[in-house]
Structures are given as structure tokens and as C-alpha cells.
Image 1 (cartoon, rainbow, N blue to C red):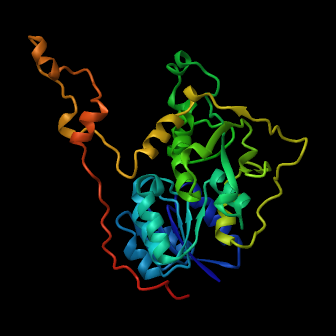
Image 2: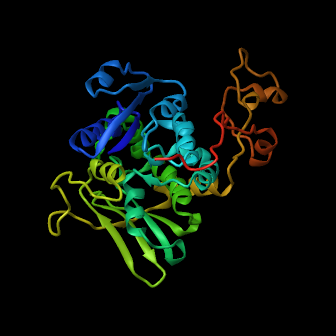
Image 3: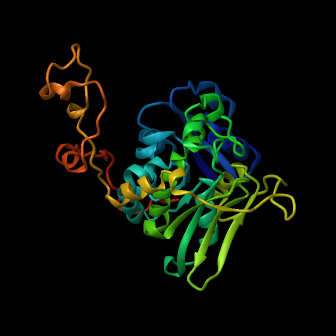
Length: 349
């Protein structure tokens, strides 16, 4: 019996994970957490003793002693739980890409000390992981992440100025939570996934490609140094990568909605650089673990009166970005506290 701590239980990933855990006699739910929702009723329904709403999740994890942590928390709030699981050698099923985007070096160091498994839950990264099983990074020429292009694929810049939030939330192939759906519509999500892939698979950014695959049937591809190309295909259903991570190294039955030849369009297209924030993500990733940002005091503020001379133009309400050089002089470094003590070895099973 594998004990699962589910963080982000009320989101899209969390709800599907509950369905999978409930259907498997091999999985046991030992902890539940959500950002702000009262978890009392859900915990009672699933007979879970350890549950929490908001706050630091480390104490919850220490009390529950899970075998696997499914981190589906939205945003940077999931970072502490990621570091705890990796530091303690607990298998981490990661659906919180922001942990690696914000703290990739810390996470890799914690994983090295803890010695546990890191299983990606994002569909693209789960696909790459499966294509790479038992193969070293030296054998890989590049990995290829796919993007559907979202609801606004093919629209010009002028057309994008007329879109609405409702249209952005109507993803053509995936059913996801609102945050990641908006990120997918703006295509910022693919930039985050690029950085996540860099830390997960240890490849430099120039060996991580992005292509458009509108039907979302091809989840990712891996190019090997001998010229072979492996692709992972499947119906766009997040229960598949969730189940893979929870059941690993086994494969539990989910549904019969697999991609079959002749039923789905698996054609791919090149990604136009102007359509994706990949260039920005590559630059940010290449800048290292700490990026330079303007200090809060350097941000423009609104002036109550119009400037009377060119010298007073700094108080203009028009936003201005400072140069990279001035930003570097004024940036603040972000540190993450690690209040738990480092374990002397891998947690016993």
C-alpha cells in the first residue's frame, strides 16, 4: 500500500488524483491540503486524518509520513513542499512547475541529498520521462516539447488585442484549472515548461525545442544521437500522467481513450518565435538562479501634477523599464528558508 499526500486537492489535478486514488486498492490517501478551501468535509469523506488549508505544508507532511507527495499546489506556494519531499527522500510527483522555475538548483541539490524519485506530472514532461527511461542524458540530442497553440493559435497581434477572458479560458484540447489555462492561452506556460525541462532532464536550453501540435495527441518527442526519434502519443487526458506518477513503476488502468492511427491528426508545425515566450524563458534560464529585477523603489509612481520641466519627467505616470545594467544594480535577491533540519539519510519505509 502506497501512502499519498495530495497537495492542491481541490484543483483540477487534485480532483482527478482523488478519482484515481479512490479507484486503486494499491493507493491510500494519508494527507490533504488546499490553498484556502475548508478541507474538513473532504477529509471526512476520504477518511483522512491529516489535512490543512493554507499555510506551511511541512508540518502536515511530517505528521502524515507519506510514501509519495503529489504537489499540485498553484504557484510558488508549492516550493517548500517540493524541497521537503526531495530532502527527505520521499517520492515527489510534481505538478507544480513553479518549484523548479523558481528554485531549480535548490531542488536538484535537495534531490541529490535525499536520493528519492522526482516524477513529472505535466503531460509533456511525463512523456519525455517515459521516452528517456533507462537512457542517459549523453544519448540524447534534444527533447521536443509540444504546444497546442491554445485558443488563439494563428491570430495576429492586432487580433489578440480584441480577445476576452472567456475566450482565453476555452482551451481547445485540455480541461485544466483557470491559472494554467490562461498561461496556456498567452503561451507563457510553454516558457515555464522550458525551464522546468532544463532542470528535470539536465539538458542545456539550446537542446530543448518547442513545436506546435494542435490536437495535443503528441505530447513530446526525444531525438537521440543516433538519429532515432521517439514520440509519446495519447489522448489529452491528465489522468494518464497523474496515474503514471502515482503508480510508478507500474501502469494502472485508466480509460480506453488512447490515440489510435487514423483517428487523430498528429501533424506538427514549427513554432514561430514571435508566437511564444520561449526566447524570454531561454534568456531568463540562462541568466542563472537569480535574475535581476527593478527594485520596488525604482518602479514608476503616479504624479499628482504634470511635470513642469524635462528634469521632472521621472515622475511621469508612463511605465518605463530600466536597462539590464541598472536593474542589476538595484535587484534584490530572493532566499528560501529551510527551517527543517536536514535528514542524516533517506527516510525509512
